[in-house]
Amino acid sequence: MALLSDLINLNLSDSTKKIIAEYIWIGGSGMDLRSKARTLPGPVSDPSKLPKWNYDGSSTGQAPGQDSEVILYPQAIFKDPFRRGDNILVICDTYTPAGEPIPTNKRYNAEKIFSNPAVVAEETWYGIEQEYTLLQKDVKWPLGWPTGGYPGPQGPYYCGIGADKAWGRDIVDAHYKACLYAGINISGINGEVMPGQWEFQVGPSVGISAGDELWAARYILERITEIAGVVVSFDPKPIQGDWNGAGAHTNYSTKSMRNDGGYEVIKKAIEKLGLRHKEHIAAYGEGNERRLTGRHETADINTFLWGVANRGASIRVGRDTEKAGKGYFEDRRPASNMDPYVVTSMIAETTLLWKP
Image (tube, rainbow, N blue to C red):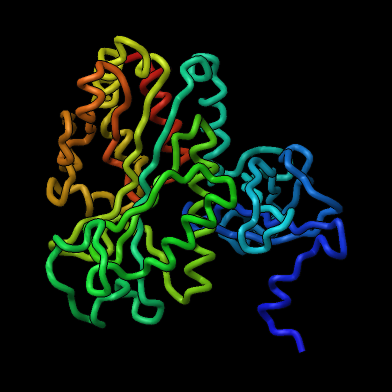
């Protein structure tokens, strides 16, 4: 008798050319990922060759019951680390039957900004540091913490090793390898300052692909924690008190910043970001005011400041960038639950297209 695991791991290519495509989209809250699968006649590597599909938007908070159809447009393909073989994950965005983007489709406007010739010419690079917290499923309390109690104070946990310092490493490592398998440009992982909290980095990715890759990596993480019976939280301040929050620091550079004389370009870009600080904060994630307090390696939410190697600043410039006179900078304001389509395109728009 075949075991369930045997059937899950069946290699379809032994008996059919058909593949399974998992269509993935963002639900009505702007953070809830949804997905469903369909059979295709054979392997596909170009999203434009994939059929559009639809779903019941009234069940995701994205359409009324009397006109509930929302159309999925395939936009990016990744290899499926769960089904493997030629099976794929498909990142989609969402439209009305008339072809209008629905309000929660943040990719549509981002794509307009990234396809602007002035932005294309500057080859915008992003590296996103996604922090997240692993929670025990039934009590929604961080993994490894005593139920209703607290571990020792922060200090030994950041990049820590050992059974009393690092909890959930099997999940983190499984996610790392699954993302590499999928073709996501994941560049690293580390344990974070608060125990039970981890980080992965996606990038450098160019333009709209940064958002596609981060959403795909979040989907894979949600699926792995589902298998492990653990809950992943992207809340920017999951535990109140003297504990670090969770952010999505966004590293950014343009061709002009990476070339000789780039440091002056960086300073001008940071000046423009400062002039639009309130607009950026409003778009950088829900509940960010609980995290951006001026403590725990953050700048106060109402204050914009930048500095070299300063982790208490809104914008941090690395020592290597200052020394080389060119490079990149890090926007430390985005919360862990930010939408990468919104954040990356807004940074590009402010620094390259906006005229103060």
